[in-house]
Length: 529
Image (cartoon, rainbow, N blue to C red; front, side, top):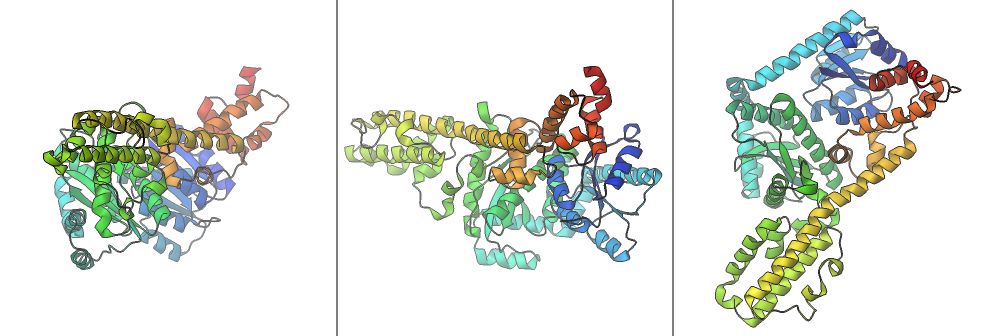
C-alpha cells in the first residue's frame, strides 16, 4: 500500500478527494490531511507518507515552501501540486523543487487515479534503480560523491583544517558552520549482501545530496558516517534527529536492513569532529549491546543519556579515565581500569601515595558520571567509597581496584537507568499535555515538543520509540476514545462530538472514526444502544 497525504486549506477540496476517491479499491490509503503547510510538515515528519498532494496557496506556509522543506528532509516523497492558479511561474518553481505532477482544480477522480498510478510506478522504478549497482556507481562518480566521502573520512581522522577547507572548495561544498556533529549508521545485519549494502548507501547518498550542503557522507571502519552541520545547538539537533528518522525510514523502505543510529557530541570546530565520532561509536556499542530499558532502540544520541549542559565536552578538560568511562558498559570496566594502570606504570602504581591518587581519581570520575545523569553522588555511592570517607583508601592496589570496580558498576548502572527514566518523564509530560489539549483542533506535534523542550524531530523519535506509536496515532486514538464516550450520549449530535474532540470538519471526523473502529458514528451509536 502507498500512503497518501493531502494538504489543502479548502475543506471542500479535502472532503471531495477523501470521500469520492475509491481508496478501498486501490493500492493507496489516505494517511492524513492538513489545512495548511505548517501543520502538514509536522504531520509529514510523523507519518512519512509515500506521496504528498498539496495546494500552492495556503496560510502560514504555502505549498512551495512545504515542497522545499520536504525535498530537503524527505527526498523519497513523491509530490503532486494541486492548484486553482493556472500560472506557469508556479509550475516552473514547482518543477525546480522536484515536483513531478502539477494539476489544476477541480480534479476528477480519473485524473487523480492516473496521477497516483504514475506516482506508484516512479516509486517502484526508483527502488529498482537504487538496486542497480552499476548505475549507482556511475551516479557516485558523476556527483563527486566518492571524493566527498574521502573528505569526510579525513575530517574524522583529524586532517589539518586548512587542507580540508581547500579540498571542500574544490568540490564546491562548504565545511564552514557554527556547530558540527557526527552520526554513525550501523546497518544492523551481518553478513550482508552487496546489493543490500549498495541500496542502503544509495539512500544515504540521496539524503546527503538533498540536504542543501548541511550533511556529508563518509565511511569509516566499515560503517557509514554522516557529518551534520548547523548554525547552533537547536538547529543542529533538529537537523540531526530529522535526518536519523529519514535514514531509518528510507533504508527500511528500500531494503530488508534494520539500521541502528548513534548521534555523537555537538562540537564547535572541525578539530572537534573526531571527538564527536568517538562518542557516537561508543554510544553505538552501547546500543548494540543494550539489554533491559535500552533494548530495541534504533536511534539514540548523547543528548539522550545526559543533560545538555553536561555534554559540551569539546570545551571541558576531563580526566583521561573519565573520557574512557563516560560511555562504557559494565563489561568494559575491567579492561579500562587495566589500561589506566598500564599508562601509569607498574612501579609507580605500587606506591601508597599513587594508590590513593588512583582511587580518588576513579571516585571523582564515577561521581561525574552520576552527576551527568542527573543524580547525586552522595546518594548513589556509599559513604565508604567517597574520597573523604574513612574507607576511601586501600592498603593494596588490588583492594583499591576491587572497590573502584564496584563503585563504577554502580555509577554506570545508575547512568543507564536514567536514559529510560529521563524519557519516561518526557513521555508522561507529553501525554498529560495531549490529554489536556486534545480537543484543541490546532494542536500540533510542534506544540507538544515545545512543552517537553525537544525539537520536533527529536520528540517525534523519542515518542515513537518509547510508546510504539507515532504522535499522530496517539492523538487520534485519544480523540476516538473520547468520541466513543460522547456518542453514547444520544443527546449530542455527531457534529457536536466532532467539535468536542478536536475536529472542525464533521465529515473528516466520521471518516476517521470509521477508519479506526470499522463503524460510522451512527452505526456505533446503534450498537451501543
